[in-house]
Amino acid sequence: MLKFLGVSRSGYRSFLNRKISSAIQRKEAIKKNIRLIYDASKQNYGAPKITKELRKSGETITERTVGKYMREMGIKAQWIKPFTTTTRDSDFSTELTNILD
Image (cartoon, rainbow, N blue to C red; front, side, top):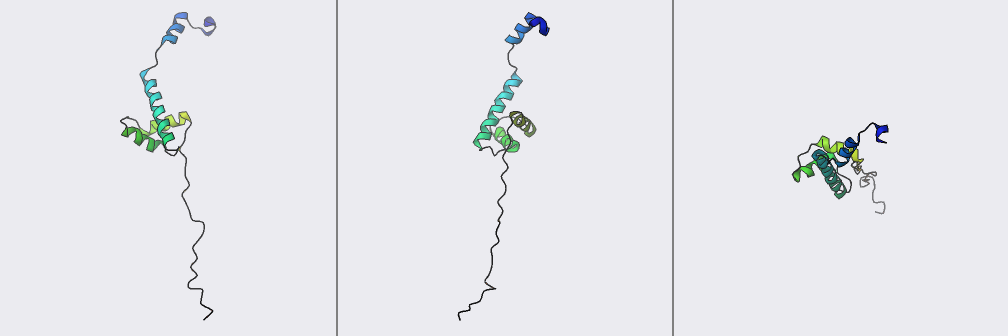
């Protein structure tokens, strides 16, 4: 099978024994923290607020990076529609007169 793929035995063995790079480890740790903050906010926080929370905890990261990681994980902040009144208060005090008097 290695011949079919064009890979040497030593190359395959070195691939299996290779350690995960520090950049990938950092990325996975940040993704884990993003998920924790996202779930703690009941899925309401987006990249700006999550970035703020990460910076409070001492992590140096940009909002753009947090947004990229959120897209990779497939999570998105929920947009809550602002409350709008659908009825108008009627002021009948000027229109109504006392007809019993």
